[in-house]
Length: 127
Image (cartoon, rainbow, N blue to C red; front, side):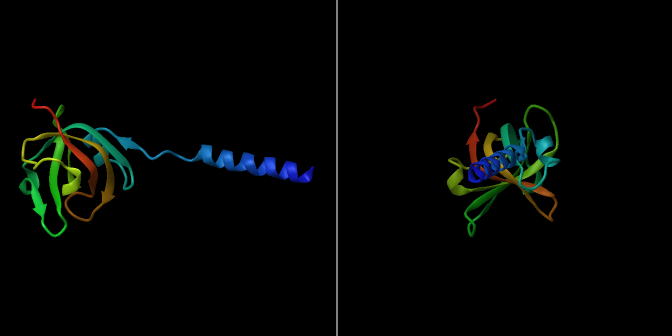
């Protein structure tokens, strides 16, 4: 009988611990992402590649692109994005409208205290 009670108590404790965990925030705008924390996720529906920070840069050594984006709907803050070449099916250019359905915020000591590591970048329809 004591074993059954112990098993029930342990099960309740494990379920309670799992339910009390806080979900990682998901930011859907650049302004929200810029005020987020490292480790937060992003899902940016429509952003535009900015000419800031030199436009679009490509690193042969890392096989990745880096560029700054801002919300296309509202003139807002901007944030740096880094994406592996394998995770983008087009060559990004200044002014492109894109979406970043999956990404994660990473801390930096550069001009942008946070930047997005994009898991995928899609070209949006022309606006």
